[in-house]
Length: 276
Image 1 (cartoon, rainbow, N blue to C red):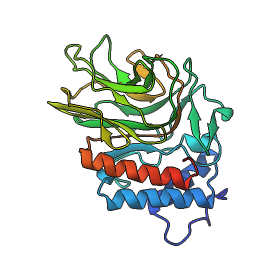
Image 2: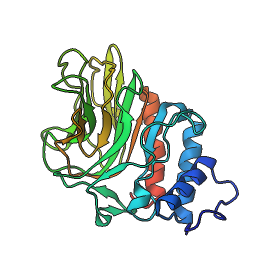
Image 3: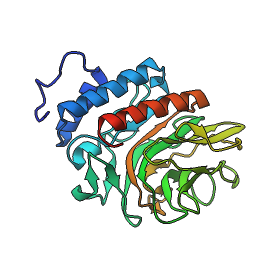
Image 4: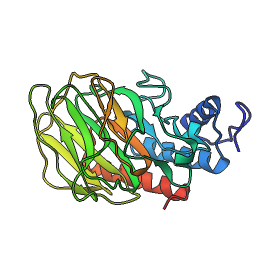
């Protein structure tokens, strides 16, 4: 168990995994040797697949204790470049009992959410995604997202009806622009919504497309992306959901092939953490 700030790096551990573990300890959490190995393998697989530059913020919701859960693995498309968003996810009302490394973080559908601090205009083409261990129980609640005033500059994943269906909204800065394709969610597998302006928006679950693409838009809006809810321009968190999530990802757009590869990498992580 990693409980100190030095002396825990084993030979062959990926440097970004080692840096994450150090930040967890600083935040007040701990990391087991098995978890560090799983995170290291995740990092190595991401690098090998050529995905690292597409990942701006990734949180695997692992480590021991809620403090560990709130520490993202990645905060920028490289470890040496600009880092984006909050150093840790800002916790809105989650309690220690809401988190277990064996499963993930549990929302409550009323007042619990995370603020990543990453503005939704971080790139013109974007993806957001998460791994649902259990789905929310109420339709039209938000798993992730951000919105400007009214119905513009919205990028969010939401629970449709029935709640096993997840869709996403992608509105322009000018007018309300409709939703993205709905996708039947696969538990314990990665869900990803991809926006590739100006023409292609797509949703994937377990590496499989949810259907034909829809229009997509970039945004200049700086409202920061939330998890378990949609953050609004006035700083409030709208329509929170109550799924149990095993992690999230935010970055630039991914092709279908890269989504499938990324899903495989997440699946291997879930297996290594005993979350399958």
